[in-house]
Amino acid sequence: MNDRAFLAPRRCLLEPVEAIFEAARLLDQAASAHVAGDRRTADALLRAADLPLIAEWTKKIWGKFDQEIHRYREVPGAPPLLTKVQRKNARMPSAEERRALIARDGHRCRFCGIPVIEPRVRKAIQKIYPDSCRWGGREAEQHAAFQCMWLQFDHLLPHSRGGDNSLENVVITCAPCNFGRCDWTLEETGLIDPRTRAPETIDWDGLERFLS
Image (tube, rainbow, N blue to C red; front, side, top):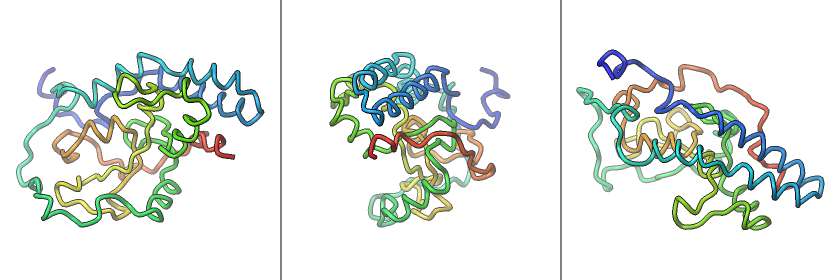
């Protein structure tokens, strides 16, 4: 990769693979089947959405450092990494703040744009479909789509760099975009500030129908 491409602004660390959106369609159909009382079909659709290509994409982002993906560069004057004592007291948004963030951003990653699912929804599905919505202690033991589409409350200025939980500093993202950026600032990874574009609404309820 040449310097010009390396430094070019981008919306996310790695563009999503089409398999993610195919899995979202399958999961949406699974939710509809479940609500209709057809658990056999729902189970089959959940299994079909567990696509290896998605796990490969996720691992590239939150796995071993890759300069072509993470594109870290030093930024003069960037906020320093703070000790735990120096950081803001509240690590994560309150329940009220989380509801406000989801109401504003929807169930969609503000960086890469993929649909996302709250952990409470995934846990509820797992209780009903423990085999088809697998979620073990290791990455390889987790359903690829639910792992990738795991909803996060991401601090644009990382908490470790002095960021707070204000609605202006937190956005809804997927797990790969959140964990892949880790403690780096937007500038250090060449990411376009997602606040410069309005949240896009999509026909996706985060599989909330499973809870009805």
